[in-house]
Length: 200
Length: 190
Image 1 (tube, one colour):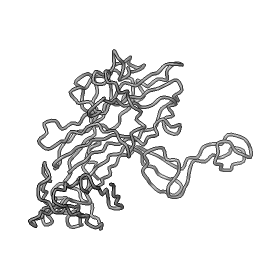
Image 2 (tube, helix red, strand yellow; image 1 turned 30 degrees about the vertical axis):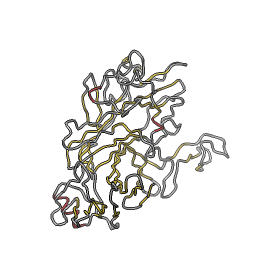
Image 3 (cartoon, each protein chain N blue to C red; image 1 turned 90 degrees about the horizontal axis):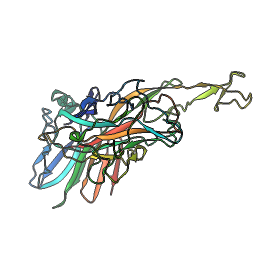
Image 4 (tube, rainbow over the protein chains, first blue to last red; image 1 turned 180 degrees about the horizontal axis):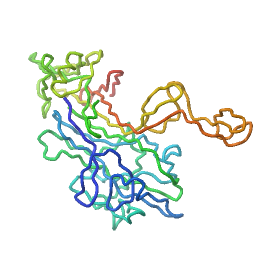
């Protein structure tokens, strides 16, 4: 007995378009696109500055199957994104938004289109003016995605989903690529990551 | 097999839940004769004396298929624990969907999954080497130690994006211990 679960992202102007995730590419298309190819690339900033991709949303939708409960949704990476052998980000990173309390994921109803300068950079999730309303006033800073691995994943949704739950889409992990002046230039290989859930 | 549409997953099961009440009644996830599914329920019922996970047999896997479920038969043993009065069972399965790479080793033809850049083949140990354009020798470093010239990289590992899922089963007593297992190992955590 197993649920059918689709990994999804949300893109474009609010309320966002739910899209099954085949490929998700960090980019600077404002508002966001799932994968604009090599258009809207992430740019290495001038010395002393920081550039970011637009923020991205990753979550899951229970689309069917037979199940009693699904809960404890987690997200993580192999923990080595910054490494020279992987994306060689120098002091850059992939950052993930956190809440001070409760689940770290963003409810679908709080989706907000990424802001920034299209083709150049996205604004920081925590930018006091242009940042993400659901996160920018939180005391807790964004975290390095490399901190969230198979043994210590990011818990982004603890809601218990049952067949009677009206909404079958989980909260969304909000993440963005952060580039510093020592991040290496060039097209990067596909990034490994995972989503995990509990089911009975 | 369990990726039934682009990035749409349904776990393939090697175990199914089983429970016994103090009055001797037994219930399980799949009817062994028909493959029909019984849900665990929105709450764990009262009065359980034992809970566990039973292995999927080849015969049950066939019947599960007719009910829209994927079963992977296993020769693993059943894992069952007794419950004392007032003890609450921990029982669930956990699915992880990975976005990673499938790697083909051109040296030994092995194919394996990787969650990061593959540095060497886990079967034959092949890894990137450099052929010196001057002496023609394969070297482990970019610069030929003999000729002191830059070598040409030869990578025996071909990677392409891949997605897959893994399922683990959990069984224990709340606040006391939990067994985490799949068909190849069992770990007890306190």
